[in-house]
Length: 321
Image (cartoon, rainbow, N blue to C red; front, side):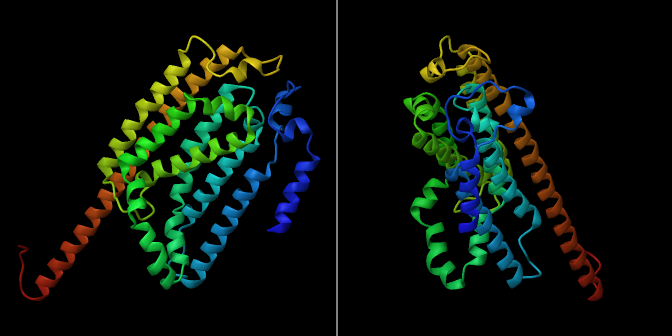
């Protein structure tokens, strides 16, 4: 772990200052130069690397203890894909230019909320924690926490939905957003807030981890359907704003790209159309999972009836009740 941190720190020191920190970025000399504008920040890379290593350690330990029931491969890949999405959102050119262009900043937020968070939720980290913990730790610590009143409250689907909406609207229509563009600490806090609120939002939809509340499949579809208009309305409000909402984008020094107002309109359109598209994909997947669950339930019932019929035939009966 120390070696990884040292490697990341050394790589950061070798980068040009304009790439290694938020702030003024010169115009890229070519599309390739833009794509190569990556930054490495310890505040991002260290938590991501630690999360990846801890998950890998826990999954390997479960596989050794339960060789016939390891962590499903798709859950492992989903967890790592979610972490990669965070790196792309914060360390790629998207992160390098997020304080210069509101449109790029909005792409960053969509990646964190609508790609990274659901992928990490599919990774089922709570289930993995319960499986890797000792029975004593699970019984005396983890399960009491999971069933505690605070967790019951924050995991209640209406609360998770409202938390996601409140974070989305509250950050974009409060001084927090503009302050995050000027203050790196606030910027980090904003990213953490988005990821945490989004993980809570996707927790009842994915349904991979245990929860004090369990949404039926129809409830998950309604939950997602109601999430679509609030992101669309937010995007529309930003798109139609007659003036620049965040002074930072008017004062930032750059000689290329769209005007601040046009950039803001692009940001609103990205939230509006991009958010709707991602919610629509999530709805399709939720319906597909529901159909698969109904199909599996039908197979289970048919198998049960076949066993019952075979038992009755062996006992001389020919009809099911």
